[in-house]
Each structure stands twice: as structure tokens, then as C-alpha cells.
Amino acid sequence: MAHHAHFPTNKALKRERIYIRHHVTEWQNSWPLHTHDGYEIFFFLQGNANFIIGNEIYQLQPGDMLLFSGDVLHRPNPMRDTPYIRSYVNFTADYIQELAGDDLQAKLMNLFANPNGLLIRWDEQGVKEVDHYFAMMYNEREKEAIGHEFMLQSLMVQLLLKIYRKSKDVYSLLTASTQSQKETNVRRILMYLNQNYKKSFTLEDLAGAMHLNKYYMCHCFKEVTGISINNYITRKRIDEAKKLLRLSDEPVGIMSENLGFSNPIHFSRMFKQYAGVSPQTYRKTHRE
Image (cartoon, helix red, strand yellow):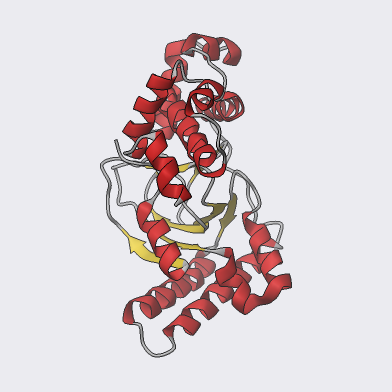
């Protein structure tokens, strides 16, 4: 199973502090729940898709923009019935600070403070203007003409300023669209899982807490998010384990127990399945 930290993004951010894609149409056979470094602006242009960020489920419409921190678990869930077209840019906070300065950077980065992401819905003219920024940024990055680093950085700050000004218009900031009962249930499940993933519980326990039929609950969750409840719980636990392995000296056995795994052997097996290496190897590599 594919590792859920997005390697191309992290690699580009480490090297250049910005990663820009424009009018992406590629289809993936799997859309993993994942995290990455930095911050993301996701611009939805065409398709039929939900987007999960933290506890929130966004039913996307063309012209929708999502802003969020990359360290929040997120996943697009597009349907195959229509082309899935999007643009996105990932960047680091210091990339903005160099040109914007401390005060303006603080204002701009506040756009990414919501742990469940921020939705901004652009009108037809706004879509054209934002798309033009993405096109200019992408061309600067691809052509690498003289001074392209400054031009790209300047355009990035200008785009964020445009978004910030838009965000001040209360009518432009919309929460997720009115949701069906099915999506409301899935949102409740996501909130419960994100708050209780360290505990050991069964699907029957979860169904009882949600006051839902277990099979209906599992079907709804898979249909809306594109992944199973057990898959989501495991990925959430592995993501937390990675943070602990990087930042603490907690023994793997204790870590596995605190994260709700049945035993250290099961934890190590699942960690290697999702991350590609053992917990010990992951810790050693990232400490170095």
C-alpha cells in the first residue's frame, strides 16, 4: 500500500519551497489519505468530487478553492463520471515571509489556521483571474527565465493577497454546502474518529456511539470518503506514530499501546505496510 506522506510535494518543498501544478487532469487508481509539508491552495476547476480535510467534507463546485495546512490528513474523492481538473500550489511559510515581511505574512498565513480547511467560492470573473495567476506561476517555474525565482515569489504573494482580500468579504466565505443525512453522519463519524483514534474500539462500538446500523455506517463512510473506517483509523494512527517517532524517544512498544494497536507486532507490521519501513528504521532515518 502506498505511503501516505506525499513525497513529490515534500521533495519539491525541501528543494525550492514551492510546488505548483496547473490544470492537472491525471487520474490515480487510488487517492490515499495523506499529509505533506507546508501549506496548500487547492483550486477545483471541473469534475464531481468530495474533499475530506480533518473533520470536514467539502462537496466541490467548479471555482471552489480550499486552503489548509499540509499536516492535516486530507483526501480528494473524485468520481469517474467526468474529468477531474484542478490546480494547486504548495509552499512553505518562510517562502512568503521573505517578500511579504512579518506583519503581512501573519495575516496571509491566518488563511490556513482552520484545522478543517477554509473554503472560498469564486465567481466566474474570479475564477478567470485566479486561473491566470496559476498559469503565470506555472510558466515562470517551467521556463526558468532570468529572474524567475523573484517573479514566482512575487506572484505567489499577490495570489495570497487576492485571496485574503476576498476572504474579508463575508459573502464569499461559505461553509460546506448543505449536506445530506448520509454526509452529516460521515462528518459525525470523522469527528469521533479524530478524537478517539488512540482508543481501542470495534465497529460495533462505533456504531453504538453513532446510533447507526453498523453496515449502513460502513457503507456511508466508504461511499463519501472513498476509504473504509478501519483504513482511516489505521492511517490516522500511523500518521501520529510518525510524529512521535520523529519528535520523541518513546519506546515502540509503549507507543503502539498508546495508539490503540493490539500489540507491538501488529503495530510494526501495519507501520511497515503503510510507511514502507519499520518504525525503528523510520526513527533512525528521520533523526539523522
